[in-house]
Length: 298
Image (cartoon, rainbow, N blue to C red; front, side):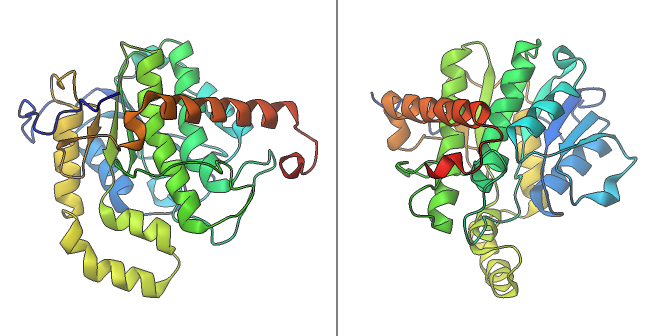
């Protein structure tokens, strides 16, 4: 199929004083602190949003008490389903924002107790499990899935079973999240779901390792060349996320809030369907084999 994504759509302007007050917004974050996720959450809170934050079991301790929070294990299917059930009234949510959920892709392959690679579980499967559950229970608002659009990576070792490479597995779940947006649009035609870029330096940190001083130094030096400041990034993203109407043809956004094309790989519907079906197989195998040690190696 051809790629008909727009490249030059204009969004209705939204002033910095636009009314976000009272809107019920769910933000799904993960481990670690700082960055775009923290800036976004704090800005939404400052503007009066009725904020619900779903997060991992570690990190982000300084926010306690500022808004409603749910903590749990975002790295397992069981934990993801339990967290989703904590949302008592999905129909009241106006917006769901899935932000970065892992500070860096592990240097060597790590799997959870269900046999799923850590990055894939945290950063991709959590979004599908949580959103599917909320849709089943009445959610009808907008969704933004943050990552890196246009990755154009061909997925062939989805769970990193055969040859684990840090950058390869990062590309796997980034492209899978882009396919997730397209897959949900196909299965739920009335759902307003969009993919949006994180600031480029946050992708570099996930690739290089947030724990590395050297990488942090390089990223600090290079990030002004590639990315807007975090304040400008958050301001622009909020202006797009909460504008009155997003053009129906828009699917993906870059870090400047501009509409961009999907990757050539995902322009072919068969590739989107392949990623969705591979996810189905992984979920079915993981759930049916719980308690069966090392099933994923068989």
